Length: 249
Image 1 (cartoon, rainbow, N blue to C red):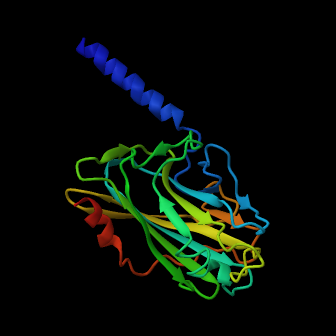
Image 2 (image 1 turned 60 degrees about the vertical axis):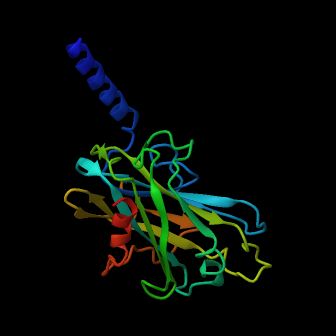
């Protein structure tokens, strides 16, 4: 009986890994439409900016290079750069910025070919929305999340894991509104992910390659290509990492 249980457990583990084996290249990924890269890749999002109804979903995911025995939480840095180097009002803090960008950790039903890094128990959200933080015409978005103490799970290497949804509201997106710039092309890069394990706390860093055209597509486009689509430098200071730990300690 014990042997049979061990066999069944092994088969279940194999089935779970096989179900999420579509993307195995380690790295960070961004995708439009509420899908993981292993579902339906969508790099370019276009919007006519004629309605204030609805929103767009930008999904971030992560393929660990090595197994993580006790995943507890993470922090993400996502960089946005607009064409022309001048940040329009649309991406400001009163338009599509801080007041209209929502973050959640609920894996969409459309994301079927990736696992949920939170196992349905994540807590956290938007920690920072910093204008021109990586030079003129840029935004650095800081997102944090964690699971409750005692709910840590093991992550497998080579499996795509859903991490966050960034919901970009269409509020004030019309060209007739005060928040102009919705039609200006932008490039959005998933630059860095820092994950955490408890007992003892161990901080680790995974940086995206940032190379356009590689298998690790850590960037997406808004409205069209951007001439200078680069991920920028890694954050020099981590002022919010303690907030991640505070979520589950």
